[in-house]
Image (tube, rainbow, N blue to C red):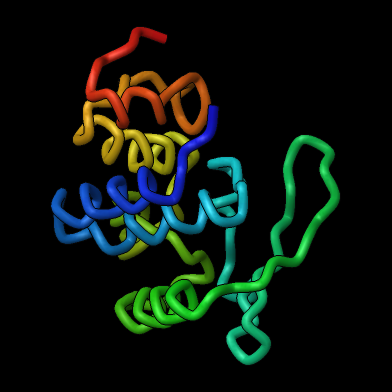
Length: 151
């Protein structure tokens, strides 16, 4: 079972309410849903992978899949431009978090951190907390029914 656009919209609203990184988290949810990205592919995205002029996103796939190019919609382009402007100091990675190693102001999100960000929005809507529940394993049903399901 996969999430519907309405369910993803609710996850994005929940992400926006969480903390001051809510906009970044909502952009992660949107990007993962629209382009079918695995968490590792999502957190590995670089600014050089985004062609703002042509509205394209180049994705380096993991697990032996072929790289692909995806068209970006207007709201995605606006969100990415906003993230890029807000990223001070600039990082080569799109989705960053505050780093604590070697005085790095912003470090790329790890797979663990990315998975946690995606799950957090689901927990706000009553979804199960195990990472295997995102995006499959019936998380959509949990959001629709409001009942918690053990994975």
